Image 1 (cartoon, one colour):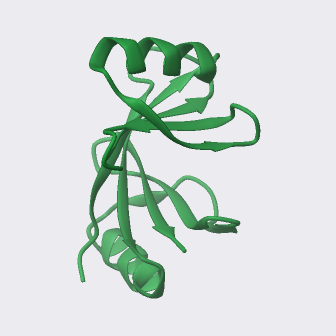
Image 2 (cartoon, rainbow, N blue to C red):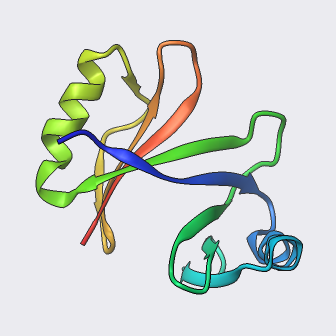
Length: 117
């Protein structure tokens, strides 16, 4: 099964401040938070995820896509993306929420493959 689009993630030095801004700007609500404010997801009141805010250096191009797949499909989907000439930026890892791989597409754009439990 192919992965699907999950959300756009902004790399920002202050995720909390960015979350306040995007909630107010778009009328969104907080849906998820990890490690105090290292990772915050805002979205629709019905649970649809829209924007991820991840602690990192703000810079032009500091936005990346998150793709999502089922946890059981993670390894196969990662292999499929690598066969399409995506490259790993670091070894895939398991986290409390599932699995993640940080990748770059053939043109140098960053994206993540995520699988949630």
